[in-house]
Image 1: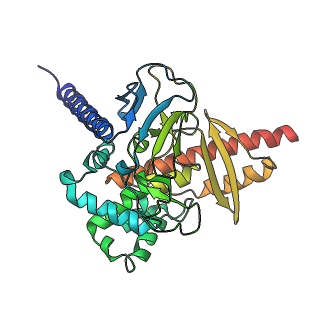
Image 2 (image 1 turned 45 degrees about the vertical axis):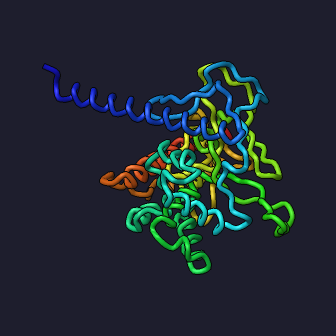
Image 3 (image 1 turned 135 degrees about the vertical axis):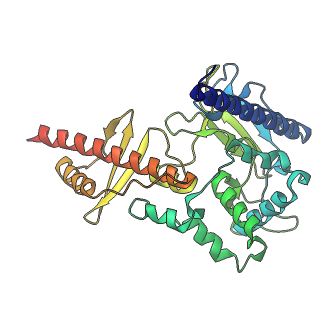
Length: 338
């Protein structure tokens, strides 16, 4: 008779397999939708899961510069040249649900049903981050609140979720000029919601993908380096480990760019393969003293009763571990200078 633990593991594996199968079906629907609209996606891409993290992989070698996909402008949720336009349209399509033309794109939420941007977390949970960079944890919610009066269409629960989704999965597009209209300031850029782009996982050290956007609003993705069969396609959502956690709610893999404040000054360092790198002009003795002072009163490791608290706990642990490694490295460099 199987043990309780073995039975539980079996159930979890079955659930993971079922979730992966649903993701693959969602991917197939997305590709069919793009094809029907005149776009195309290479057949060399497939969905898989590694250590519970879903991603997009190459089924065959992909050469540097090879086209991965072409998305027509009509398959991208654009506004005109204002955040309100994009979020308002996104809210409308989310409310339509399966009836929306963009349903295959909105199903991309299935890639991470827990899309969770810290700015939209419970105020009590968010307060647990007050003592850690980048400090402006509520910035995205503040933007939303500041726009509700001038953009009342987004001032409800669906609008709030649309704003959170916009923050988590949007990418930069060129302004689309309405028929008979004019560009607001020339070549403008703004956020839009596009297929495929948000399906690639983030990794600054292994990024192998880039996009080109036409003035008409079409998007084309290319490999930016050789990707061997079985390799994962990686995107970059920006730089800065604290900023990545603020905008997306996860601790990025190394290389990580960290910074902390001590004595009113900012101290930067990079952690790559557990090796610490300091910026030019760093004074090891000053850095080690500042890091030691910071570590004497580090941010608390929060409880993990909620999914948000679990993420905060992971962030705090990663932060403290990184500063400890940096302090040790700085101290070793300082001792070499004696």
